[in-house]
Image (tube, rainbow, N blue to C red; front, side, top):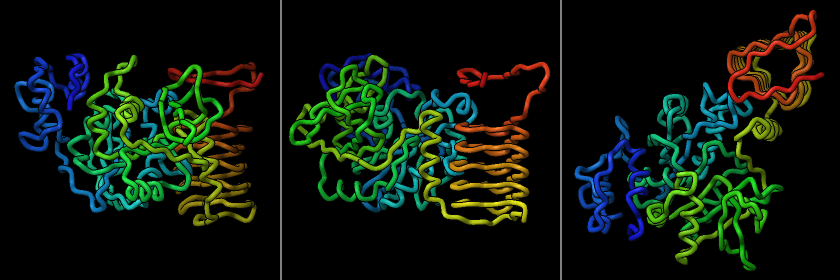
Length: 425
């Protein structure tokens, strides 16, 4: 039920993202919160005092289907990816490839392997690119419904706008730019067996001030969550995979916007804790990364490449040497070069007179000529020519990297907003 203290400002925040103007929040109508009095998509006008019903179904998309396994997934793929600029000026951060496969695809594969088939993907201003890449989900064995979020108003807001899609199913919420080694199948099975109201995943981190942190009691129970604390009470960070029962819908309606103007999922979980609901945690000791910046992307790329299966589907001439776990995809060509794995060379890419070092992914359609690259990601249709040596780099799509004239000595730079460049002196 909607708490008595909810004011017009909170309702306005929710409705702004729906493109709906708020009239007046009438207290007598607030009692209808969570009650479907006029069909599955027409309860918001009771909720917020609107004169007319609001239909929140995504235009042109099928309605929610009941999950075969009684559980759905909610994948968040909105957001602007500011920490990965300038790459994300032209591509969603969730589609930046790791070992030549978008980060988002790993999340969808984890979900499919956990036996969940119905997935709602929350999309923002990069919706078209996400939809073009994922399609209807059938290539992952999933049924995908896209849920538009007009503005990124917080993780809890994503749950709020997905209410009708999720229905009364349990669900896993997976941030589309997170990477968890080992998948989530065991966690989903445990959640369905125990049926707590919520389960959060924690991992120890060296700098707790950079994360949402969970404070645990002597028995290991979660007692408090704090977002990026100045004086953290633990080193246990909350990672971007959450499991919820339908009770979380009451929690996200009960909270108010944070100082950032967002509905925080940590506040919703804290509401569950404060109201004595069953919130449990699992500590993950394996590998997890939020691929929000370049170094995190490179580290995830390194981890995935450690497991690459060697495969040569494109021609490699006699003057070339391929060492270790290297995947050369169909249509790629290697001549007079040395490739030391783990590494992946995408289809249609040409490597000539070059060295490709460990932990390097070169996407499709690239040309690497007379150059040295290692511990890097090169996106599709890019060209690196006559450069010694590129290391620890993320090179975008259709980029050309070439040497500058030797005289006069100097560096010529054309940089986009928020770029960062390191130049040897």
